[in-house]
Image (cartoon, rainbow, N blue to C red; front, side, top):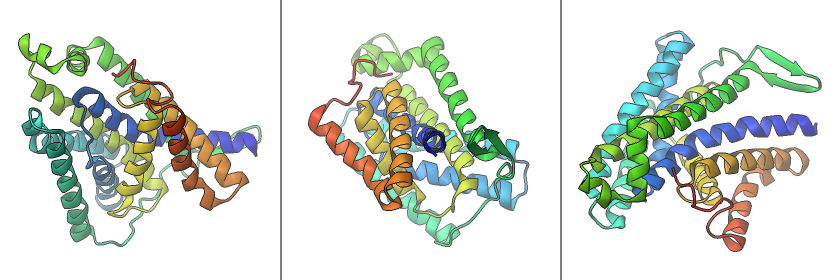
Length: 287
């Protein structure tokens, strides 16, 4: 059972990381918190539901369209709530993204009601056995999609012109402006990238759980815990912290109780803040 809990925790950690990496990417570049980040995850789940369960598109195209749609929503969100406030106090961006979160969540409640929806998992009937460990195909797909997304993100940030601009903006926005880099465009791209990761998370998680307007709230709370434990703005740290949180929750739920599962993450976050306020991996590597 120990191996089974560890595998389940790694899958859950990969899903946390998909949401948390987008959040920490935005903070690492802009040094602002996007309080509407959880609603991007929620919209990703609903987009997958509409395309796959309602419009009956094949799962692959529905997943791809969901990622592209949420990247577009993230770009619009950045242009509406973050880019106009780049030179303004930190609080103005916080209030703008918080307002966007309330609007998006209640808009989804009006459009879809609070009734939970379900999208039947296309690979849930596929069972893979590795010795005594059993994993469904949908969870393996989620883990594989997360690992592929992280590899692509690393290559994008390290090798592409746009990724290098993001790293430059993370070091000094003023220096970027002096050499002609449009910081507003960089910010919009960063939020769009985070939105695409949220869309991917929503698309691979949506078939596993109920979909309702409030699912983004718990997701963003767990993402905050991951970001704080990994070190604010530290993308590799967020990935490692997400894996640690996922495995810890799985072990707590399996050996203690399901009630202890959710408490574990936030207890661990408080302990990290007490012992190592800069996070387990610090902020030396931000983007």
